[in-house]
Amino acid sequence: MVVSGIRERLMVLLATLGVAVALLSGLSQHLDWIGNLCGFVGQGCHETSKFSILGLKVWLWGVCFYAAVIGLALFWPRILFWLAITGTGMELSFVWIMATHKVLCIFCLANLVLMLLLFVLAFDRTRIWQMVAMVSVFVLLGLGLVMKEASPELKDQISPPAAAVTEVDAGVAAKVGGRSITYEELDRPLRMRLYELDLQGYRLKAERLEQMIAELVFRNEAARQGMPVERYIDETVMSKIPETTQNDLDQYFRENPSIRGTWKGTPEDLDKYARATLQQRRFYQTTMATARSLYPQEGVVIYLKEPDVPRVHVNLGDADSRGPVEAPVTVVEFSDYQCPACRRNHETMKKVMETYKDRVKWVFKDFPLRSHRWAAKAAEGTHCAADQHKFAEFQDILFGSDQEPTPDQMEVFALELGLDSVEFRRCLDSGKYERAVEKSIEDGRAVGVNSTPTLVVNGRMVPGGQTVESLSKLIQEELTKQKDSKP
Image (cartoon, rainbow, N blue to C red; front, top):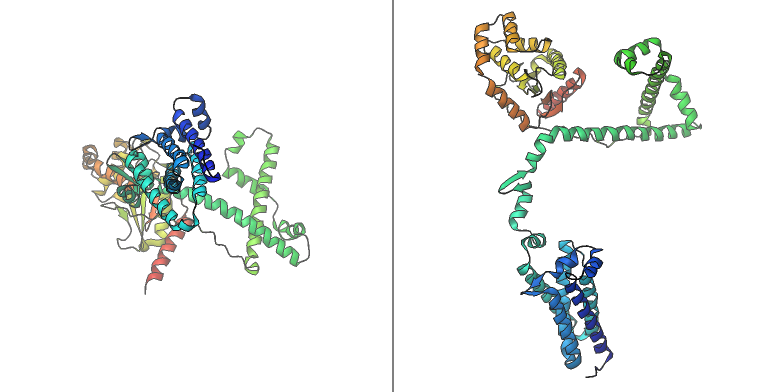
């Protein structure tokens, strides 16, 4: 039969191409050169060629559809309108699934182009709303058929089950069988490390921001005084930098005692290096100080905020403490008796307690590290001493001594304090407080402690190594906050 009309001829041509595309899709599983051709853009061809709807491969459905288009174009062209609508709706649903599944299939895309061209050829302006309605119906029908035949993995990607959505909303990071791992569990042991990383990033940004502000401030001030920036800096900064003296060099070497042993050059070169280092440091400090003095007149406002210190609730239990029970500020210290940094922090805390007296309660929580052989036993020893009302004194001896806190040595310490050494040793050897120390460690891990010393100031978690000044600043902030909150 001879096809009449250009539109029908074009449809036959497109349908013939469609049959070829569908056959190539089906053969891609069996002919390597076709599979390799599609493999250049992804694995979508391989996946879609295996997909079935109502027991028939999708590519076979394509062959049947395009064969039907050819047949209708030859014998019953009036029905092409409805067939084009059906095919377009179904193909759009398949393409949407492909996009959701994040796969790319060149045969699917070729089908989409052919289907859209068929749709354009079948387009009838007098029945536009019928076309839109029927395309929508077949899109939904296509999605329904795909969902019926799809694998569980694909179903989850297209439409996640309500339980999965609920788990995400509930803050679940992962599941292992029936056990959920929450973001809270994930973040808890990393809390301080994440804060310290945020703090490092903030300090880098703050330093760079201060330099950028200084450049702008100096440029504006130099322009105001009608001189080049270089000359302005020479007159206002360089002139204020004092010369480095021998006393300065001696102080530098006291602060950096190892540098002489690692230096490869001559002593004279080392002095020159130290002098240059000090001059550069003073130049930067003086430059920044000068720039800051100009902030008010330049209207400088800094919006960069320091990251908030993590706030936690520590289970104090029966932990030993110093200071009044009702003090407005509580400093909880997680510490280890064989930790050098803890020893320094202990002296810092004693000085802070002398300053704030009745305004600070110092709570001590054991957190002995496994790398320190006698740290856990020393922690037990402080509790045994506390039984005889000598916790603070025994703790001071442990931190102040260079001797390893073995049971025998701690018995000597007990005698020095006038304790009943027999009772003390009986307590120590019995393991009476072994579980209490373990519980303290668990309390620390529960709030994210992973190093010693770690301090918690009224719930604000801060790393150890604080100076008297920095720790006093934290305490003062908490006191001020409480004062401001009172009516």
